[in-house]
Image (cartoon, rainbow, N blue to C red; front, side):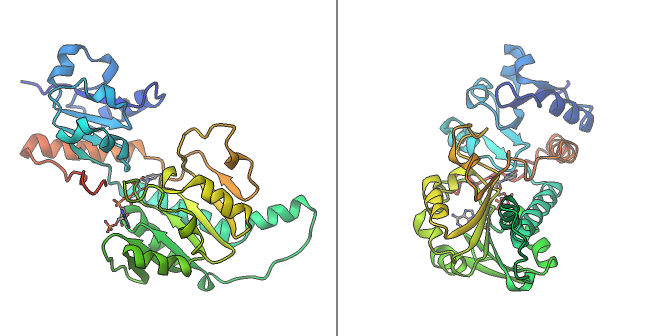
Length: 315
Ligand code: NAP
């Protein structure tokens, strides 16, 4: 007997759904991957497994026999937020290619800040010819919030570029060459010595609003910030106040509480903000599909499920 079709669910009207289905079918030609909207009620009622890209929670509820979902996104906070999903084994994407892409973005935008490109852009606008003193990477401390798959890959790239690197996690980590901090006291200590802070945390109950006025105030004057994780980790109005006060040099924001960032939001026009459209580490459909295919093949052969996210911890 052939296996039941595997529904693919994306956010409503996602233009990428067809491309995902194509890549997933190519990686597992023996499976029937079908977009959720193209499955009839009978097929929906048979599905035990689904592949998802930030799906609408209401759609998942229409798969009554679902046991596990494989996300092609690394962040699964939207899945965890729906209490209905507590019955599901939720697997998130762990792809070395994603970590490499993020580490490249972290290096690129750290160099943008390190070589003071925002300040030179301001000088150009004033036709001001004025070299600024050179600072060696060894004189800059880059602080990573989060030392997981993405944070640890980023730490390696930053170390190779010559920066001093420190990092913060929930449990104490030990990474070669990285000064590691953990817990509340550790965070205060790390912020105080960080020139460029890079956020790579998951969005959880504990990290929502983590970067509030008091924490941002612990950064040295002239520090900069990169958020490549999730928008609500920063308290936007606190960030705006600290930017307006001139204490923070510049921020690079790739993620926002509402995406796409509405055109009336202050971040678009603030001279000390660079806005990116959630592009720092996009999933590579080909490598991700191969990883999903391997996990599904193992499940078919052995019944073994890949490790799930920890619903209590929130990541
Ligand atoms: P991960 O492997 O789960 O690592 C998460 C890290 O954050 C771990 O080091 C963890 O500490 C730490 N952490 C979690 N909660 C904490 C807390 N309350 N206090 C201190 N540290 C805490 O996750 P990842 O794969 O690196 O991904 C991180 C996030 O990046 C994702 O959740 C997603 O939101 C975001 N992301 C963004 C993009 C983009 O394009 N912008 C792309 C992919 C992912 P422990 O080590 O102690 O567990």
